[in-house]
Length: 313
Length: 309
Image: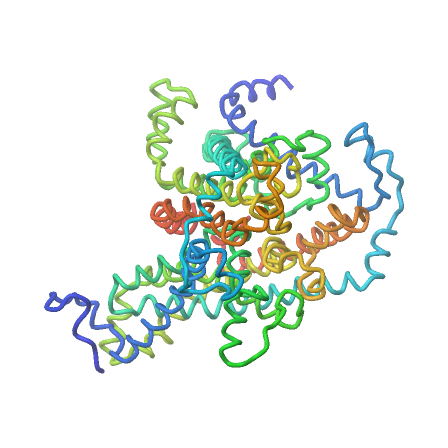
């Protein structure tokens, strides 16, 4: 069997597992396939960045181009000059994401801790109480009625926070994580030393399960940042519209920018010269950038989260 | 009874810890279940709140269901939901396992990591953003795809009003968004395979292909089975964002983009047919519940540890 002898750096001392290598030709083919797919995954974002940097005047004639004939920062300038709508949406999203992540981490980690404690008399009941919620789903309409009517959360920021706050699946992942990363004996010794459950939780469990908590925290941060569905259902007040939902609303009405620009008495001529298309794409870029920056963390913990879920009691 | 209170008292710290979550589950999971009775009512919104709305609405028995199943909608949304999910499950499985094997076999580990980083990106983006991405390709007058068609002298296509292309578009977009993530799951499983199995195969003179066929794939079969069964359990639930955001809620595409979830949403927010869409929602919940139970039962038979319960 033919094996390739060089992996990356020339002259490196070969590890034994490299004898399992595929042939050179296949290696090139595999690199092409994986590389092209990876490129396809990143390309649309790059493309949208390019569109946002295109001069609006050339868009009409040449469309979205990979290399536009004229570049421009007008879209971004426009957004920062006229866009307290965008800033407010950013603010709503950040507030919802921060509060939501904290609230959900507290709720999930406490619940998971209680059902992980062998001495908890109602452990089985509350485990089943949580697991059952993964099996059925009342559906959109009853949920809508409860959130909007019974809890009266329509047009409240809590309508963006509470529906995503708890998750039985994360409870189970974290419960498993606690039981694998914190030895029972440690908890027992805490008990013997006279520590209460909250003290044990804060002083023993939390420090030892930080990777697990970080994973769950990132899952929920991402969930809140990307959420538009709850805003679609519960938010009409333009001051409470989060970023993703604002992008959606712009999409459904191209005229959104004009209607909401701080300057209400712009002339028709000025309206026509607004950088509509590029500005929308610029907003997409601005909504995505934080995720791109946080990406290294996300990737690390998400892969870790996958393996956490795999280890069961 | 005295014992009961003694137990409560003894466990009060832990009970206090589950309290917030329990309240949440009650309001957001259990109460909506009770709320599904609106599927049997002619729902009338009452200003006096939730309970008044429910109790003052008149019972209509199975009428909502009769109306629902007498329309073409019931068939369309069920067909769309099932067929799309089936395509996603089958194609997603094939492509993500292939990709995982490819990633695991790459000679240059560093490149493999870079590819993974790229592939993982779509998973982190919301459907709203993906909707914009797709628009930059499919826009009638400015999109990249119509420009490319132009290079070959072909007429531009009105993508957002031509239903026949959308099954392919939706499948491609969904695979694009999900494959990177699922292939990393499979890759983690491949990297977890005992290396000595390959050593032994090498000694026996097995080629790389024989190793993949004889070791990698059989070792992946359990996790493939489980991921697939769990997906089958959810086959009655569609990804609302994909079917609502990506086609930009275009009415001419409904025949191929309307799924149970979007149907229920439109009944609630736009057409106002609350009874009928609540019926569709309950239909989804019940079939979905049965499927989850069955698939979990099968998962349990395959691998006890991977079952949900």
